[in-house]
Image 1 (spheres, rainbow, N blue to C red):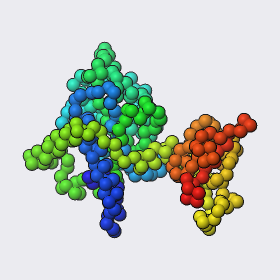
Image 2: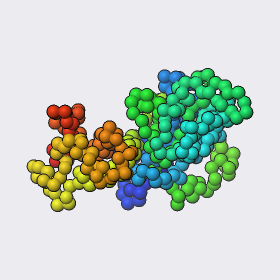
Image 3: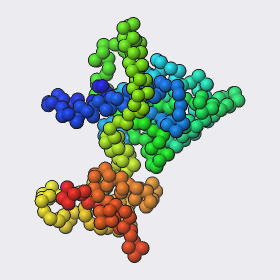
Image 4: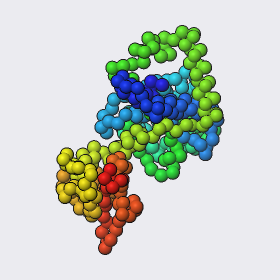
Length: 340
């Protein structure tokens, strides 16, 4: 519950709203059902997912805070069923031919702990919903059947990027608040190191709770966690900090702007229909190094992500569809309501 509480700072100065309490409960239930899914041995290929434990609080892309309890979630799984732990911070993890060498037919869960930003999630699709080929050093490789292939748990301080039905069908996000952090650890609340310093009573409570997680999963399936914070992290990572900084300045509104006015001020780019090429050239003029990393097709994806991030309407006159005329593509970002 603590790791699901994103309002703990607010609770120090005021009574929490009903929707904030409900949000905390839903984050908690999503963790329970995700745990139950991992513990259950049955694999339904049509419902196979990777459980992805993420930091839910928004932060600058590339920054890595951690210490929120994600790894502890994985260690809890390991206390109940056979788990293969893989330290996953290697930048070229998907290029390691022996990545799964410790996996066997007894492995129930593979835990990739602390993956970096921009992980190639599609690399793990066969592990999630198909067969797994295990390549061991000095031994002949072998392939586990879909029934023997373990489930996948990933922890990360970043967002996992992807689009389309294949991506949506293969992940279940669970979000961790910053209630626990580098200055406040579970031992501060529970006066013992998890698993290592537990007595019989605590182990009994733990195993009973794992059974409750299984029951919750069997009854409800994997309950989706509230997505607002996770979606903002994903959108911010899709844009990158360089693009976000440019867009925030380009679409900024002067401090003295009065929202009750019927039109945007003349120096504001919000509400203006601007050619995509002009926008792109302005971005590159201000960030010349991005010419290598941001082709114009990728630039368009970033614009769409920024619109969602700010809750702006994209091409409102075209109801969100592409705006093309005379061989030129235009882009307009505006407030969802007339004056926001």
